[in-house]
Image (cartoon, rainbow, N blue to C red):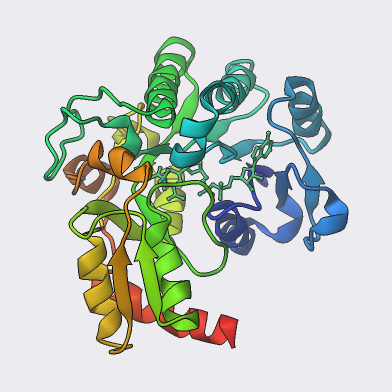
Length: 314
Ligand code: NAD
Ligand code: AKB
């Protein structure tokens, strides 16, 4: 049977790249991209407007297109959700429950929903944070992601729903800019380095955070969704490790290519969010269950970002 795939939040940082990767596998006609934008503003041969706060609209799109698999990416990220806590909670939670209910009622066969390193909190050990480390998040975003993870596990255990999830670290990409996250500096810095030759960072120089290049994140997502279900021991969400660096370390790596690049620091409210998150992640469970391994280290990621952005901005 040909899978029919729905991606929500498909115009975002991850969705724009995941949709293309899924279309390589399943074909353009079998991967429907959706977001809240009007189709008139979107150049995509298989796009529809879908507000994930509208459960009836979701059910009707799923039925009309005979959707079998959903990648539910639409959400409000950490920094924006701190400004609009109730809206962030409603968007992140209500929409997930709508898709879990559809999966429970066998309207779809499989659901992917991303969690985040934001589920960890200030009391969690910061270095090589374990899969089962303490999760007492201090942000609305983190609370919504942790609650979402537990809902995923509940629907899997009670109703046999095949829902899979990864706790993404901060994702670094050049095709689509990130929106509203605390790790966004690690993308902004590349644009500013190439356009202005300098960057004022909103985190302090020694704020180490877990990060990952987008190609690794997309590959991980598809590998997890294609993994043998009997091998998956985690139905909350998998820890994933790739990079861990501070703004100063990233700036030093960029300076190897752009020696005149200058960085300064002016931490804002996002510093407190970053301070509550781990610096690095232990992903041994993902390695064991579905052979996860990252490919992009700091040097390769930096080189790839600069080369692609130089071309894009030319
Ligand atoms: P993004 O902000 O770039 O994109 C989110 C998309 O959702 C946007 O295109 C937005 O228009 C859309 N959207 C917002 N409200 C909507 C609604 N009511 N209906 C339909 N669409 C709506 O986010 P992203 O970085 O691509 O993240 C995707 C998912 O991955 C989110 O769940 C996020 O929490 C998670 N995640 C991302 C990162 C990261 O570094 N990018 C890290 C950890 C987890
Ligand atoms: C954010 O900073 O909010 C995201 C995330 C790590 O979940 N990039």
